[in-house]
Image (cartoon, rainbow, N blue to C red; front, side, top):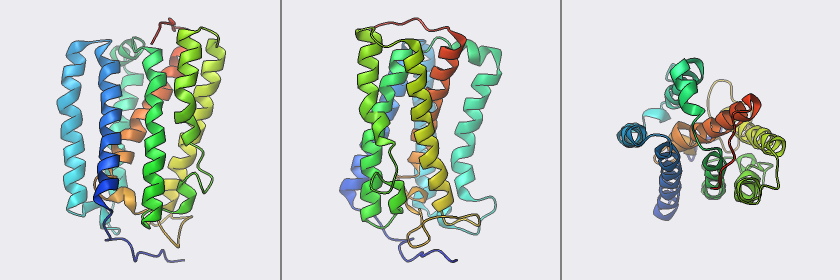
Length: 243
């Protein structure tokens, strides 16, 4: 079955682009604030690194690099590959594990509020024929619940101390499952050789600027926050502190 690519080169309204850009900045702010609590030096290095990466993705997407659907490897691999390799390097190296064990668990939890504006952005993309309905909360994507519950979980865990680490671990695992669900559907809805869903309206929005920042930065950041929290909770290295 051939995907409908009639909207492949259509643009989105400026207000939606600006809203998603602000969502990306919010994600960067949460990440910077979290890292700064561990090391000011690392946070100062983080800023130029993230800006270079985001700028590179935006320029490539603006030049329609990722819209070359016959490219091998697919452009999406070049978008998600580097962040995932960086995350893996942090977990497999002693220095990386030592560093992530210092990240504040409270900040790792609050960071997930960015998933609310992300889901609103996806709904906007759906209205403008850039992603299929199944990638929105109208189509069975319940990832917005992670963003809505994140501040509540953080409050009752770190401020009121009424939720135990077991409950926090369960929440992280459930929320990780929700983000993995949308990631899998997003990949299998993209107009790639292995596409399985969304043939009437493929997932073409994330191949464009600025929405390429979703798979290239926001999702890896969310994924990283969950992995660190789960790792910390399982290893019992958590020290509950107020947010």
